[in-house]
Amino acid sequence: MIPAKVEYETPLLEVRDLKKYYPVSSPLGRGQVVKAVDGISFSVPQGTTLGLVGESGCGKSTVGRSVLNLQPPTSGAVRFQGRDILSTSRKEWRALRREMQIVFQDPFSSLNGRKRIRTLLEEPFHIHGMGTGTLQQELDTLLDLVGLPKNSLNKFPHEFSGGQRQRIVIARAIALRPKFIVCDEPVSALDVSVQSQIVNLFRRLQRELGLTYLFISHDLSVVHHISDHIGVMYLGKMVELSTNDNIYTRPAHPYTLALLSSVPLPDPVEQRSRAKIILTGDLPSPMNPPSGCRFHTRCPFAEARCSVEEPSWREIRKDHWVACHFPKMASDGGGQHVPSA
Ligand SMILES: Nc1ncnc2c1ncn2[C@@H]1O[C@H](COP(=O)(O)OP(=O)(O)OP(=O)(O)O)[C@@H](O)[C@H]1O
Image 1 (cartoon, helix red, strand yellow):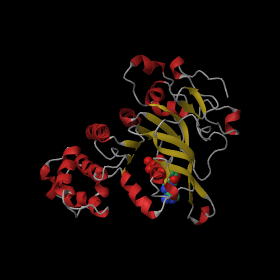
Image 2: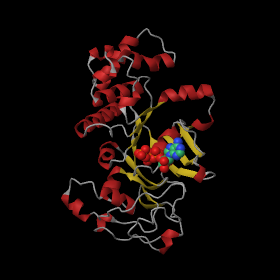
Image 3: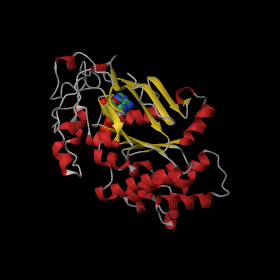
Image 4: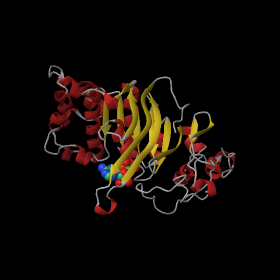
């Protein structure tokens, strides 16, 4: 189901009913598929950040890789600047790929340890056939943008800290001045003290270069610091999508409430008024997802209807979409039912 009203004037990226199924390779599961992403739709307006949150295994990274066509989706549409990226020619794709980059979680494995920083930063320019005329100037600008000293170029990755290595990875990603970056858990491998510096770097680069991000993280406080909108995923589905403010102060899906229960709010009044849900049990298998609402097996508010009927998207307030038969109005004291659709 597509949240038709979640349309923005100038979305840089539009994803419609994206599905990614992986065939199971083990002998026991032969013929079955893992429904890693199962019909997800969203838009990201230019210059903004959509945060994507959810437990490990809910399909966040698969969304990130699928929108860049690194893993071709099973079905659905991905439009970048209005162009369907899944049906472009090779030549068009090459040009588009310059505009769309990805930063992965692990700065240790993202960089070839045998190459000097100069070589690593020059690679994007060489791969895309850019001349070497102003290369030194480009490298100096890149180091400046990501806050690394000029003498970094002749060093090797192991001579840097984790945070500095992630700065090098980011420098490579922005080298060709892309418009869009998938940030896939880009601070999860870093010390907490360094995480906020890298998040602030992403924010500054967004302002200075007009970047648009799909920012994937299992950590809601990280996503809170950078996102304009937030999508909450559960077992291959988007269950809630709204502004950062709505998700944090007026979460409506019981799963979002559960995720937020462990995140402290700066305002103690809001903290007290937010319903608390402690999540129990493991994420069910995406090979055999529960019937009806996929969250019903772990939802403390589930009713009979939830196990048989899949909830459709509904807009419970402006720009606030939720897929739940009985969404909550947490700002009303928590746990109050919105009338069922
Ligand atoms: N190449 C693959 N082949 C088969 N199954 C896969 C493949 N990649 C991912 N999956 C499965 O798809 C589901 C979603 O995985 P995905 O990595 O997208 O989740 P995630 O939310 O990003 O979790 P994490 O943060 O742990 O990476 C998981 O059940 C995973 O095991």
